[in-house]
Amino acid sequence: MELSESVQRGLQALADASSFDQSSFQALIDVSHRSLLSSHGDPAVLDHPELKQIDQILLKQVHTAATTFILEAVKQNADKSTISSSLEELTFSAEKIEIFYSIYQVHFNSPAHFLTPFLSFSSSIGRRPAQINDISWRLQYHMKNGQVDKVNEPFYSISLNSEKDGCSEDMNFTCTMEQLQDLVGKLKDAAKSVEKASQM
Image 1 (cartoon, rainbow, N blue to C red):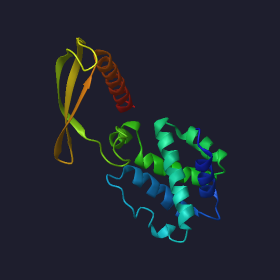
Image 2 (image 1 turned 135 degrees about the vertical axis):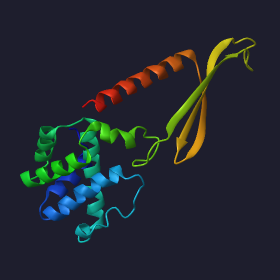
Image 3 (image 1 turned 180 degrees about the horizontal axis):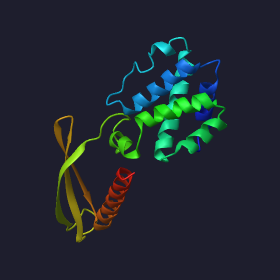
Image 4 (image 1 turned 60 degrees about the vertical axis):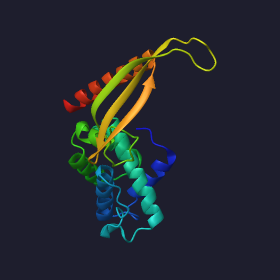
């Protein structure tokens, strides 16, 4: 897995037994997984009793590195050997690799389980995106505009009715035929990906 230098440094600090013993390591990995799946951002996520003695700046750096690694592993649908080899390169002991992978399996036993909270990054991480309930569309024409007398261009007016936390909301936008075809193609690709992930 390709990881930035700051993520690698954070993970190497996490691998260091003098900074994180096995119990604090296990607590941090569990908290990192839980924070990604939380339906609401919990500012006290790092207030775990096992993590109290660790420097807060180091703790935040390591938590960020761990969550980044978890997201990358899920994104790549990494198996145990990929995760293990990546962590070995970062000087993780065999015991810490086993702890990490067992917690990872508990929380993310399949990619489909992970897709629900992360279908849309327009919502903040850990927040559930709005669910689309209905769509309506209308074909319209631009007859003329301020610069040109005749335009005669067709365009689509689209309205998505969505629901989030019990509140209904409409999202309206317009697009050309080409933009609509592109959108439909991307939605078909997304549907195939979700279907494939649910079959794993």
